[in-house]
Image (cartoon, rainbow, N blue to C red):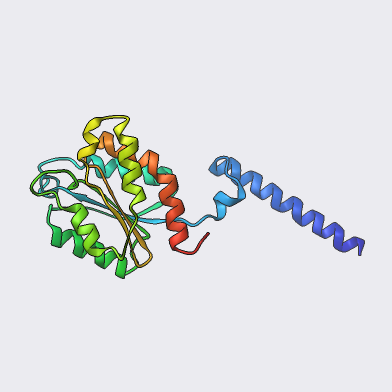
Length: 194
């Protein structure tokens, strides 16, 4: 019996030592961080000029950087034209094909005549998630009154969460910094991980 207890204690010491070495190599993470669900994220930039490569995709790059810094995996990133059918088809195929757990869009959610990202999102969504864009607009109003012109939407298609973000780099950073922890939780709930 003492031998079993001795080996159990030694095994625990080895596990603790390995965990401490892992913390040293990867940063200061707890057990939950090591075993948490890693989201597969798709980023769609809805902007015809960026699609035609006449402008740089600053918003999409900002999203990618923030998502990867949060420990999530970017599985797809593409600029597409401001076209409702194109946007909804891509989102539909990603959700139906289980390509991504989260689709983040940037651009196409303002009041311009070509802006159609919210409509494309709601064409695809089975269930709206009204609180995400409401919270984003409320938060962004403290930064600029022009955020009241943002028409972003969010919804769930199957097991995929789709969230529209603003088109400008600074607005994308501010909105995603505010929303990301809650979006991560929402994806975990949708996937049944919580």
